[in-house]
Length: 287
Image 1 (spheres, rainbow, N blue to C red):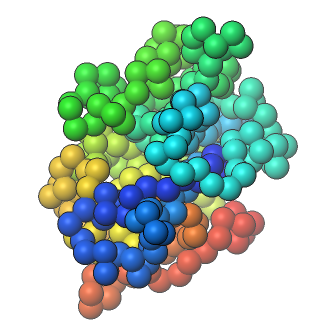
Image 2: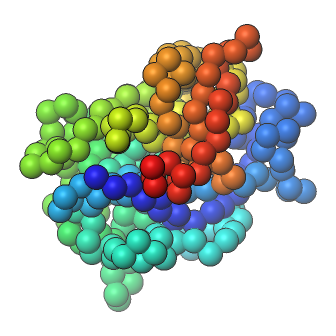
């Protein structure tokens, strides 16, 4: 098995929204804001090569939304899924599975694209199964008013309409059939219902794809919870449980949204669980 970081493109989000009730004087130390109060955000996906399987975890925003839409997010940099795949000798048609941690637009938007005539939508990965879970799918397709702007129907419904949608409830899932992939899921409900945090067992190590359970290094302190989370008190409990488990077992935390830190390990301190080491993907995946 081999792992590859896939950079789908960078953007910016409001720092206050990313840190909820935490004062800017605190979060600005780790996530400095620009003059518009926006902070750097990545959309770092993960590609797993396992035999004849190529599994892509999350797909970023994609590029089918309007200029007005993207104007809210201050896109920056030159990264894209296609460029990242090409760097490692792959093409999007090689992808066999797309695993979506959840269906907010910045995590699944790249799964669906315009057709050639721009009259409708089609899968951006024509040979892939798209993996979600039934509870989250229902939550996303019957959205509450709080999350309606994040669950865009053009990102979601075409997966089902094209017949490539699959549901997982690991450990019993077709995702792992005919595969030696050692893969667990931590379900987290604080950010959105049934977000899936993949735990990949790789060369004696456990790599956790943190999605929105831990967006950046700056979110390590337990009260540093995003304003986007639907159940912030539940996020507190989930972070506490997961970060203690990560420190106890020396997990490698793959940070999807931290534009400047790719992977960290954590340790117990008097102030709670904090950073132990900061590691690049090149360092870890070449071991």
